[in-house]
Length: 209
Image (cartoon, rainbow, N blue to C red; front, side, top):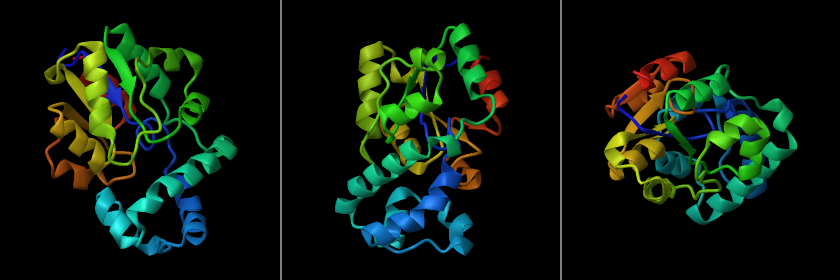
């Protein structure tokens, strides 16, 4: 197998929270006073990285943690509206049974992650890093690599956003792009990820080769 360690993003990678985000974002905009999303622009915005999107929405960086905290709280209140992508928990078990070490890096809270992953799947995640700042994923990758003792060349970070890709590349970790997340797969593919996963089953198949 090419990888000993598989590190996952959460929102848009393991859990299908994008529809909930769309249903919430304009309420957040009203509360925190930034530009509302024009839903006719969604496909265009899904090609933006986080910095460009924040700029487009007129959201000052100092407000980002407050907006994130509010979003996580709303997600906790309505967690019944959000579910894992089909096949995720089976895929995690397959990877683990094939000897891979699994971990997690997310801006979301530990409690929200725990609500969605069952206890068996959560137990597979070594040194999970939750409530990570918007651009703090690289340092958390470094933390997981250090704690597991696995070289960056034997690890892959699986995610759905440019900030996942950027963190992986900066730390010398392979990036695996999923086709079902927040960012359009064609936009991610332009940056030559090490792996592209078109479906959850394909992820298990490719990573265990």
